[in-house]
Amino acid sequence: MALMERVEVDVAVIKSAILISQRLLLVSTLLPLFLHHSIQAAVLATDRVDVLYHSYDGGGMKIDGPAVLLRKKATESVAISAYYYVDTISSASVDVLSTASPYSEERQEGQLGVEYLHDKTIMALSVKQSDEDDYLSNSVNFNISHDTFGDLTNLSLGFAYSDNDIMRNGDDLFQEHSQQYRIRAGISQILTKNLSINLNVESVADEGYLNNPYRTVRYLDASIPSGVGYQSEVYPNTRNSFSTKLSASYYLPYRAALFLHYRYFTDSWQIDASDVELSYRHPIAKSVELEFKVRYYQQTQASFYSDLFPHQNAQNFMARDKELSDFNDLTLGVGVTYLIPQKYAISDWRSEISLQWDHITFNYNNFRDPTADAALGEEPLYGFSTDVIRAFISVYF
Amino acid sequence: MISRLALARVLLAFILLNVGGCAQLPIEPWVKPYERQNLADPIMQTNRHPIANMHVAHVYEARESSRGSDGTGGGGCGCN
Image (tube, rainbow over all chains, first blue to last red; front, top):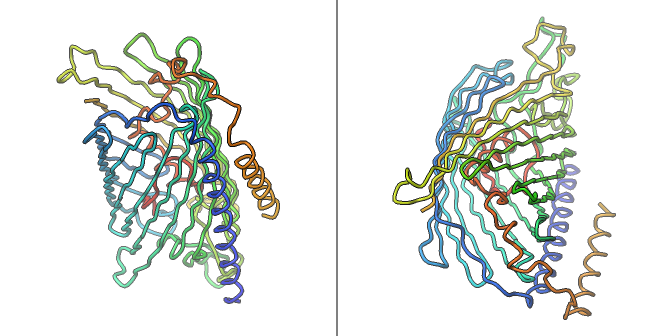
């Protein structure tokens, strides 16, 4: 049995590798097609610093903290960037309440990057570390993009590798490991003087310990009074996914912008997902910009997911993680940016202050609320809503 | 899977033929640099607020199974 699983996993990895290499070949074949049309040089992004406060509140979880992003050109062809982000988490979510105690923890993330511009090509290399009590992740990320065809077309390729150490609080002997590989390609095309579109594809391959070490599945157990037993989740040790995103940006004649995104996702755990987002940006006079967003997401459940298993060790792989269940969510968002008048600016630097608020509603179609007072397996389906707030200042210097 | 492989092969063959046969494409860039002021307007930048976009991507990646093609690099999510 174990041998059969291993063979299936190997076949999945090989198929994924073939798909990635075919898509890469397509893009690398496209690249020289446009090279001879070059006219104008690309430029690095403007120097800026952003300081942000973020907050997430919903479903029994409160997460907030600061973030800082700095970008600075060292020369006309080299730019450096630094990013620091903190999540302070206090959780009493439905997963925690059913089998464990509320907890609090902190996650810190740091990123350093360098960009190099040569003619019409930008190469970007960044390293990243994310650190929690029970999770340490180190990543390296490389991207290359090239303007071509009279700068109507931009082609990009990227690779990323992450190495993760997974621990479990309260269990010093628990030490697991996983790795993630990402490969992506994109094409951006100006179609008219008011319309541009983007097509991005990305393949992600994980291997190693992919479980959440705290979460459990529940199963029917007639031998105990409550009738329900709990055991640890067991996930496959590989996961391969592929996503495609199509975006369009349209300039409206009265100076406003309309954005449409559609993404399709599929993976080797049989999760199919898609999301569609429409956003609209509208300036008022010279100093205010309003932004409105609506986004809908839906996914099918993983092949090894069940809300309630019929007995202990019912399958080789088992999950009751609501993020792997069948669900949908809807985001309604609004944002405002205020361009600070020049007379209040520090050293004549252009500055903006922004506030964004997203309200997200999650509806689970096969995840029942185990804290509800109802017969086993007949509890109401779970759902929650959350408010996500970002307040930030951007200074261009 | 088979249909995807077949599609990729057809596309590849098509592109290879184009590279070989149409090295001098008759198509010229049709939107001139001086016609791009609308597209260059700051309100048209999808990454107008990069720090906010990174947070949005992080929230969705922690709550949804879908990942990739969102412009972020991946890594730990703090969502145990």
